Structure formats: structure tokens, C-alpha cells
Length: 324
Image (cartoon, rainbow, N blue to C red; front, side, top):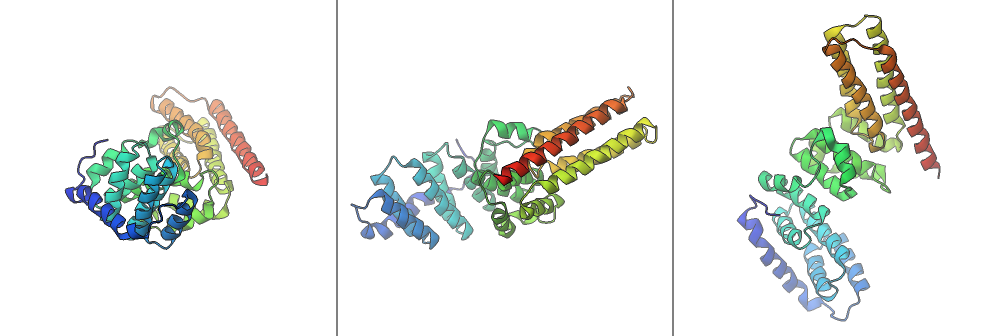
């Protein structure tokens, strides 16, 4: 991928930086060292945030054991991320530019690269990277099904969109982080809550709701809110049938419920399909009222009842999985 807008300074610093790191550590390298020992030592250096030494040792391991691509990507990523957290944006950018060419199919590398570029103010180059990923809230769920992304890819993409002021997409990706398989929800949100890249989301009620769900460690809160909105929708359908709301008034009330249900969509991917059923139902109602073609309240009330049953099934499934 050709990236436009990356500064000459960022592009040319990689070679100098990496060669300096190798020179710094070359005298300490044991050429007979087994691969497992490299893993131990690089992990130790990373924990101690001795990124330069970790990088030099990684380059040596790569030359001696070139087949271990996953090990290389994971550790290059970790070192680049450590540079980023330390505010060493030029070093992080240089390293990511180098490894994005070598490991061009690594989503985790590209996502962090975009994040670093945004922090550096290079929005054009970052935007070129972000085109690789689902970026339309209206088709987000379908896109994500097509492109399975790891938790750390989603984390970096959430940060990219938070830094760019695109809250809807930031919260979409953030929800995928929190509800990722095998991930500690509470611990992950503690990290998110301390990450300055998410400052713009702190006061958004969807973020607050996500935080509440994360610390309750279950989906009950999300389901309760969805059930409340669907019950409100059922009540409104009855009132519309009794002519208590007509025309513009009905559309206004329906639009408010739609908005509330849409915001819950960012909380739990498990509930996306149920949430979409609610939105589709409302959209059809609004279209019928707007076109003055009449409304069949019984039909839509039955659909609401079906959504409530789906929610109860989702709740039961979640409890069963937690009990295993």
C-alpha cells in the first residue's frame, strides 16, 4: 500500500534508528542462543521498557530464526507500541513504516501505524490506512462479520476514530474490544479508562454505559435497556392505533426510540442482530406513517413481542455460558 503524506523525516529515520539499535546491542549477542532464550530475554527487556535493546535482540533473532513470523510481528508491535506510549512518536513511526512493508498483511501493525500517524497530525496517511477497515456505521455489523479482527486491532482502530472525533465508529470498535472472546472485560476497561486517546469519549453516555457493563461483567444491563426501549415501542404502537399520536408526533416519538436503540448497538455485539430488528421495525413504521399508507398496530406489536423473546433467549444463553 502506498501511503501519501508520511513525512520524509519519518520515512528516513527508520534505517538510522534500527542500525543504531543493532550497533548498541551487537556486542552483547550470543550467536549460539536458542530461540526460546530469545523469547525470554526480549520479553524481559520489553517489560523493563528497554525498547532499543529489545529491538536489537529481535533483529538478531529474526536473522537466525526467520521462520518465526508471528513472534517477530508480536514483538515489533510491542516495541512500537512502547515507543508510542513513551511519547517517542518518531521512533514508533519509523519502526512501523519499516515493518508494515515487510508484514503488509498484518492488521495489528497497520492499525497501530494509523494511530501513530494521527497523533503526529498526518491525517491523510492515516486515512489511507483506515480505508482497509469497516468505516460505515450503517453497515458495520455486516462488514465486521466479513473481516474478523483481533482485539488489539479493534483497540487501535477505536483509538484512531476517537482521536479523529468519529465517536460512533470509536464506540463500535471499542465494544468489540470489551466483548472480545477470552478477554478480561474489567481489566481491559481499566486500561481504556486510563488511555488519553479516549478522552473525547469519556462524557458520552454510550461510553458510560459501556463502562457500567464492563464492571458488571455481564450483558444484563444492556438487555434491560433494550427491553425497556422495546416495551416503550409497544406502548407507542398501541397509542398510534388508538389515534393518540398521529403524523409528525408519531414519527418524532419513534425516532427518539430508534436513536436510543441505535446507541445500545455499540454496547454488545451479541445483541447486534436483535437491535437491528428493532431499528428495521421502526424504520418501516416511520415509512408507512410518512407515506400516509396507514399502520397495522397488531403486526408491529407482534414483532416487538418477538424481539423481547429474542432478548430473553440471549440473556439465558449468556447465563449458560457464564455457568460453564
